[in-house]
Image (cartoon, rainbow, N blue to C red):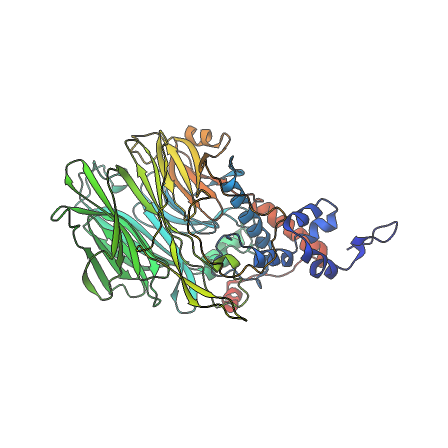
Length: 611
């Protein structure tokens, strides 16, 4: 710090006194207030060690970290504060009675966007895009938090429209964690009709399609080393040197497998079994689930379900599935009808097949939903925290204790609305408390002891759910619209009310000091469905033909909407952030002010060595 003229002051103290002494007793609000005092305090309060301490003490859910995140990489320094602020503000926003979109901005896409998927943490956006002439199709990965502003990192041709995109961070190859991406595409089974293409048909509604398709499920792998290299601020962006560098490195994408079938493919879902095997589960309509070993695609199993005893011999359909995180069983929602116009839905618990080939499964338990007209089911995908080999990767306090519930959302019609069911994990004591150690617990999802909370939103319009474990976003559109693009009438948040859930023994004991003075806002007792104040953003989207694709991330509250016309994506922020390019500029200025201008260059070979 520089000495102030006119006498000695607190700002004359050495930096270490503040970082390792004074600041350790302050709350987040205090640190932010200090920024208003002077330029030295403004710069010093951006120091990463301050925000690392807050991260280590926080009990709020933190946006999931990419597998390659670690403290020893200088590029992560400017991200740490953002993680703290995002987790606090999105939690506040979803608990308030008047939630709002805190910021919005527009990003150009390469081509017209047909489908999207936002990775947990909201950093990477995967899009399915189509050229304006409708002849070429691509899968594109964007970095929305790039230091110089959001931008595309890489793309691969898909030959037809990619839809139903799913992606997870997985360790596909030994000692290398990356992004595994799966998507569906359709091709004509026979000769393509003149003047027609699969992309001319809606990817969301096959009811009026009389053409025969063959369906592909494509699995790709992208190394995090490649993505981190392409995201480096040391690369000379938008220059001829940058293009030369890209031409000199291999494609980040690796094609793992393609699963082809003449049967219509429903939902796809990827998961890791308890013995470390990576699978992709594919619903083959109407009533089978095919499991393929991603590392060894020749190893496949097929799960066939027994008919419900009240609907023997009647067609049964699988509406949704999700494998429970950390368990070898799944939740499946099936439907059957013995009376025309009357559908029964079964929420069932099944074991995963233990051998290759076909397996006939009987539900371990189930509950039945009657007298409901459901357009679509969605089930939240919580997953497990990413575990890597890096010793300097943080482990957050909220990752201990009970995991969030598995949430089931029903999009109903006649009348249109939303219904929510939550399956909570059961707490099982592993060891009792002693004089020196606390009690230890484990958790498992068990339908024999599940608790269900039901909350109905009568929207009056069609509501599409963007699901999450503990909160969700509802996109309200005009009912009866079967086009891919829809006029957006509004956005609503959903959050669990305060009187639901189960009570657990404290695990682990809360020894850490709080990071905020005021604490968390209480959960709302009513108004769990509240309209988000989004300003005039939705009007702009509707002027461009409505929404062609929508996705969101529960941990950050970030929502992405691609309009029907034009080449672009609107980013709506549900948490308080600083734009990535401005945030990085501030961080660089602070570094230069305190330590001098950096002179480091960057290469992909260095990044491989660090990994």
